Length: 241
Ligand SMILES: [Zn+2]
Image (spheres, rainbow, N blue to C red):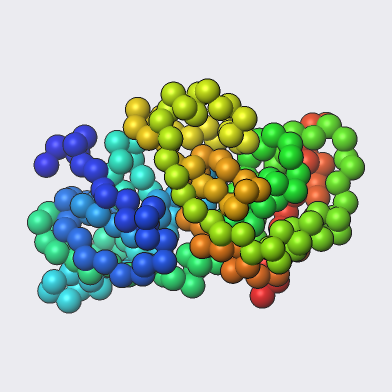
């Protein structure tokens, strides 16, 4: 198959709580294993790619250490070693590392809340296991660590639902206030843009995975606020348990 024509149905997008799936191999080589459909979230928007396992029909189990997405939409599952790769057309059973993914979903959703508590332009961000950070364009260092922690906890206690909706790129262009992240613009595909809504407090384009209601984030704390430059405040949060 022409590598330029491969796309993977992004099952993770509509089913963030599903853990196992069946798929067909489109290609498998040194660049990873491409499937026709996958629950593995590919690295993007500051969220790391999923880990997990793929088991072939013949019973070979492949440990997947990371997942990436090509510009054309092919999801590449990167095995820890290249031994026993499946061949195109083979069926595989996939299973994501759920405990890792769920922690990332909690941190990711908490970062949305952080952008509500601090209504300043976001210039960067990342998620690592059990913690995450956002960089804000804020000239004044008026942010208190305890105040931001309290505000986050208040929002989490209110337990808003997290839902998704879709708009056209034209509609998004007409509502530029929806885009909080200056550095990570939503990818333009010509197709609809996915918005993630948290109750009536937050609505922004995002392709990541989120918990279904924000109480599931659990307890969270601001670990530190760093001054990275005159205009850049880096706010680090950590899950408490
Ligand atoms: Zn998100």
